[in-house]
Length: 270
Ligand code: PXL
Image (cartoon, rainbow, N blue to C red; front, side, top):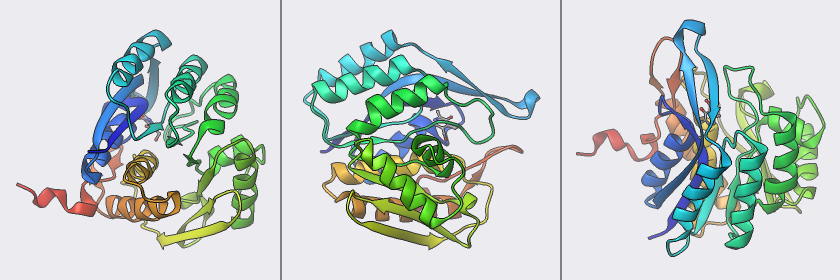
């Protein structure tokens, strides 16, 4: 049995964060561990604004000690880290336990909130986590910030950003085009430090896609844990997320989530 860890925030509504990760791990048939950095809550009286509560590096350290007291893990994923201390701590465990397959989802901002990670944390991602990345999965905004290119509006821009981010030390970079690219395809750019690949899927016009980014990175993590190559894992993850978006679930009047079980039609299981 492959064992996979997520180091991420909790999304109490179950679409993104470690909830997305664990649900995805289960669908891929890998055993999921989690270490929680922070808890995200949403306020219906403030138009569904998000609040991030950092749980602190000491509690994160205790969780990581618990996880790594086992017989090792095959891959891990980082998501919302909430502080520079949490980022540095995660990188120490990645190095100490020699984790080759670390998928770094450089979560800088959540949809629906103006709260972005402090600039120090962005520097922390660049200094501590991206250099340890087997795969990193920035969206257009994150790729613009991490690369210093700012607004990215074209496939050429995505490639340029992927190259800069790869030079920070990430072995493989997937820049996710998503809706923001403004074309009629869901197009991602995959770069392995040598070659570029354009990954294309149908673009589903829906608002029920909360959690898509976390689910994509979690699916890649589970895929590489099961010995898919990073490119194969990214392609499969794209199909997995596309099914989740196509079958998204309305949660309330503010938000709809990807359905993590869609690819395997989990709703038909007994
Ligand atoms: O999608 C980014 C994200 C990551 N992690 C957690 C979140 C969100 C967005 O809401 O809640 C825990």
